[in-house]
Image (tube, rainbow, N blue to C red; front, side, top):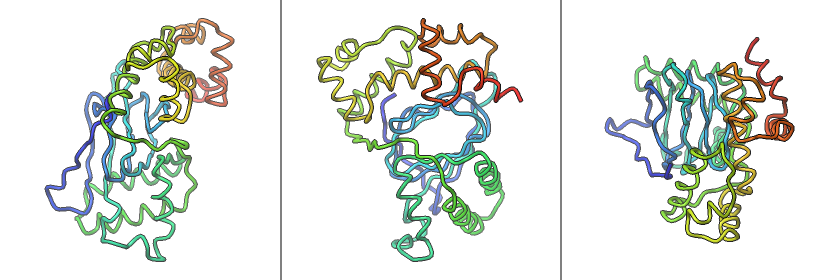
Length: 281
């Protein structure tokens, strides 16, 4: 998944780009664009990658992404549901130059500054704002922009979680190509043993050089990234299948069950049984 540049259509000369996505899966690769993006997932499960963050996603999540932050939602292909989302993409000057410097918009500016790393909102906020995003579709262009500014104000009063902690991505072609190979390799081989020598060979680097490159780029070790990916896949399986915890551990590359439990609790703050129980209520 190369972090490709995605130009945002402005054919209608509108202040922002609004779209409702509904297909078999979210097919956009790991990409970036100069626009900010507010995404509300209405249906689908899978893995969300934002900067150096990898997490399982679910319906009802709301994420705000700043400019040029690489991201993608990779759909769980075993699901029979369609992938659905509502997306608003906008330039920071979408209502004119300098508006964010005005006192009235201080909170919105602060939120957009923080969105450089990606922000995810709590479920209650996501549901409320997400439904309002959906309702924009039936409004006139003038009402759309008025209501969207109100949505940004509402979100600026909340305390979202930062997704890509400490990682700003240099999206030049060389780094992007290396990351593309690494992400694809992990996605296709996470069930097997993976070490730095394999990845170094993949991107024509020594194991030591690869480890330094990865940590500098992602602000975390490759081992941490791999465990995060595996646990995200385990979260998918716990939600969407009836496989036993032991089977899921093996399916996600953990032949040692006790180590799987430790890693799962490290990343989710819950045991696998507690995580699954939360979706059976």
